[in-house]
Image (cartoon, rainbow, N blue to C red; front, top):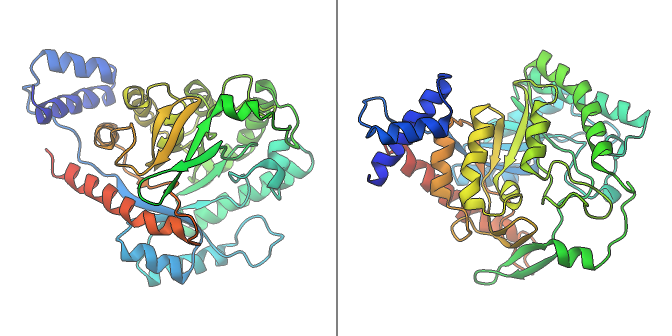
Length: 381
């Protein structure tokens, strides 16, 4: 069977699964066995689009993404009161007016709270530390942010539920003069790092904090029809954890449990393909079925389209998308198979030492690479 015919066959399997007849992988196998000759054996049209993310929207970064034809962005409005933990409707509208000036579409915003930073550096850690009554105040601010999204037409609010932040063990030389980040669990543990201010947080305690948060915010997301998208914990770690913390959202089973809690079409994932790859022993082989699991359930609200070399507990580098272990062409076909229609964003572009905006220099390469993949896939029938 040639490559074009194979992917037409997989499309038929996905369509059968969506209709509720048989699971996707079983459908694919049965259609392939039958020769894949039926007229409906086609993948659905690819609807994924090129996206990007950055902090507060400015003329500078809005014009920059407009230059490269980015379809939509994740960003934040300027909040005039530093003590307020959510933007007002007027602040959100001002952001959208600035975006419109440069013909940039804003589809996602980041939470002021629940960032990807280390808890010791987090200005507002109460939700993740289970500190009452402060966490109830912060959760109320998150609820208000959902409401301002609804009032201004923003479909998705992105957040993290992390204590350790994004953890890496060292930098290694990359292509040309770039530096790549590396993670090796054994090497990191051998350095015997201290506990964070959170102390010991076992799985039971972590799940309690997650449940408490979701029980308060999912009903508000439902009421306002705004999707809340949680980023997996980066990277995943063994159950004994790191610095006393068991990263329960650092496994595929943990993410499956997470989306089943307070189940709602508005509760899902900012699916960081790089982070999920870090949770797998053989990412290129295992990732397609992970995408199918969450994608077929419509739990993927945004994708960080990032590549690594290596796997769970030991990835030797996060790198440019064209040189890692994960085949982006292969993954794009799976996103197409499950009908994913939101954004594919580059993430963690390699750093160039000594240049203050070095990552920005490397993102345009990633924009072009992802745009090229999308356009090529859209021409396949």
